[in-house]
Length: 338
Ligand code: MN
Image 1 (cartoon, rainbow, N blue to C red):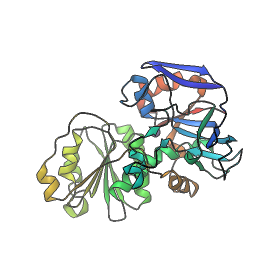
Image 2: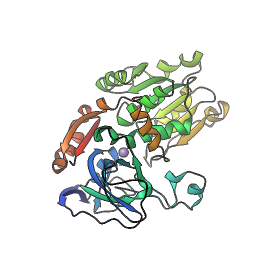
Image 3: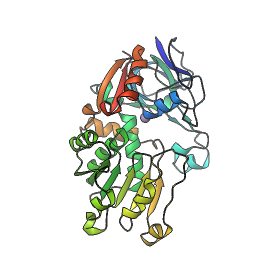
């Protein structure tokens, strides 16, 4: 039994762990596959403002039910499941209006409380989502990262009439691309890396912009009969992009932000008001994992080619080193706990 712990910023440890006993309202999951997220890397570097140390990291989990508390019903040992890492109180204002992902008492697994990079993890029964028995754990572990894309596009709205400009062809950009395509939108992806742009094409991008060579605003100004993209997603998390996003967006356009930089962004009030732009933040996911599981089960996403490497859990150190040293080679790196 192993558990991947960040003891303090910079110190990743593989520790041995016991099998927890479930409390009444809990389920113990035997983790089989877990994805490494950019946020896990941030916690390792000490650059996540919410993390408390030492911390068992990991929030992209798929596995099977191992044991259940007396109050956990509707599932049985052996069922394949994924875990929604976003735990909320249920009674604060955001929870009451259905915005549980910005709960005033938010607890994210692997951030505010211990996560799932371990062989066995006890989680509230309410965080368990069943997946089809024939869905590979590798694909099921992608439900959480796709839920981030589903969330931002549910915040902006996205449909057949939309042209979506996505900044960044990393994991967030590529998942946003796939979910936007699923909604029938035309998609343009901008990035500074040619290899990543080529990859974006394989995931369905209708056009790509190498933003080192061409101006993004010039490249997209002909979209939507010369009005510009109707939805802009900042999947790169760069504060300076907000200004450009407001400039290039169509009247009545919507801009979705996912970055967590504390640096201020400048924007033109005139752009926002004259075009009546909607700027929305998107954090984690608002109970969207069941929807993503349905999309995965129906074959409406391209998850297999997202997984670029798989490491044994005990080799987590090497997995993190690869992500840091060769980011162009990695899209989603997973840890195998089986
Ligand atoms: Mn994630």
